[in-house]
Image (cartoon, rainbow, N blue to C red; front, top):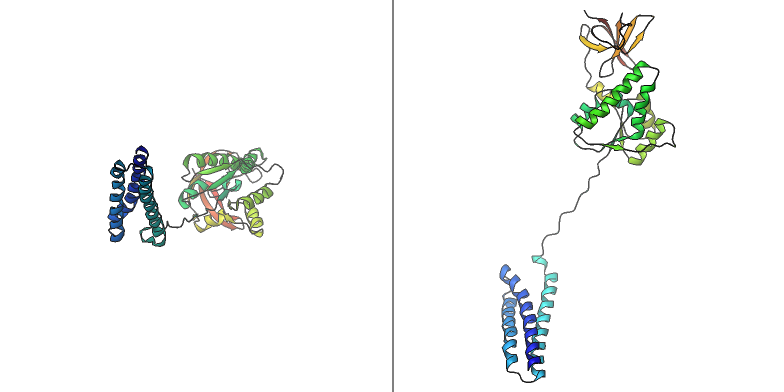
Length: 299
């Protein structure tokens, strides 16, 4: 009696749960009335197994009743699974394909750090990176500071200031890469290897390096070409301030450079090294390397 009751209780719970799995989806979707009716009757049959066990005195009848209800529950559950596979109208639509866009990295050359306003250019032209600044480039920029040329040393100082501005003002994150290539002694060869490894585009101001890398089918943006397309017009009579960074003692000329790299020769200022003075443009010359201005000290 007790065993029959336990069997009836177990299979009543199993059959009721299986019927519930069949019943709820049909109620929510309003479809397949035949399955709805079978599920409802199945739950009722499962519920009848429990009180039926109270009146069964032998083990076998209760076991048969419970086994029959349980087998029916398993059959209908299996049918529900097969139906969901064969009739996929209730299945959710497949997710859209994921498109991964690979962003091309850009590498800053030491020459572009020391010439032109690269920070302003990046903020105006780049909406996303990555922008890479490897260690061997920063080491090359620092080497400018040990040059015998006053102009090259001033370019090194400008490069260091530019790196500080990249960290503070650049809207696009700049990634500092610790790649050094100590086994490759020549800077141009280091850059060639780095561009190939990263499959990157170089931002460069050095015309010789640009030509060499382009012959190797590497991608290079020549910053001077961009400046020429946005070139500032310098006219005779124009006045501005400039710092004298070089001098020609024999001709008593001081030499300075505008932010866009334009060379300015100022008469009679050889003794004003490292001083900022006001000048007035007297003549404008177009050379192979770009424009060169001759000016006189103003005031």
